[in-house]
Image 1 (cartoon, rainbow, N blue to C red):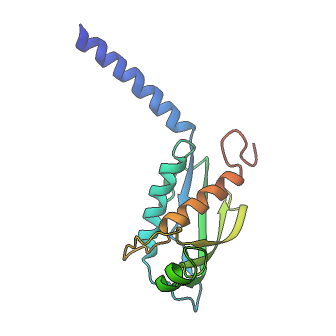
Image 2: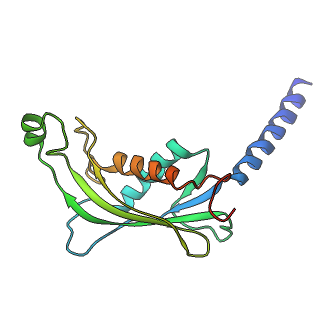
Image 3: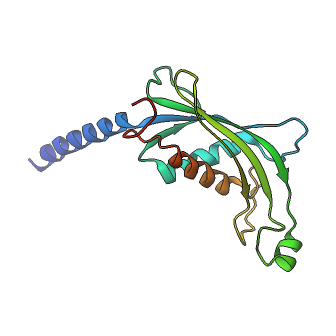
Length: 170
């Protein structure tokens, strides 16, 4: 009897989870490009994967973040962007001269935009992202900017008011 009841509860719970997932909008995160003449030493595909993971962690209840568009993407947006500047930073300057302030940190200037399912831009932003204060963690494929990149994009997406209750066009 207990096994049968557990199975029924599991099936009902699964139905609720599936129904909730359908309420979420899809946000396709494309790999950013690098402007001509800009040297950016990191793998953009790896940065895309890391960004999706960070965005899911931060805003996973609002959106389904995916790297590619689904054929039936009726309720979604596409995030595209470009790295327009990159500065390596200097550890000695950061630690000795600037004592952890803005000076000496690795940084990049990024321009990004969201388009809706019709290809219309619904949000556009240019930001400078910086290595987190006193953070030295470096991954060869994404550098020190993956987390600040995802945090900045996530914060700006909240400002764009894309949640299902207040999304443009509703």
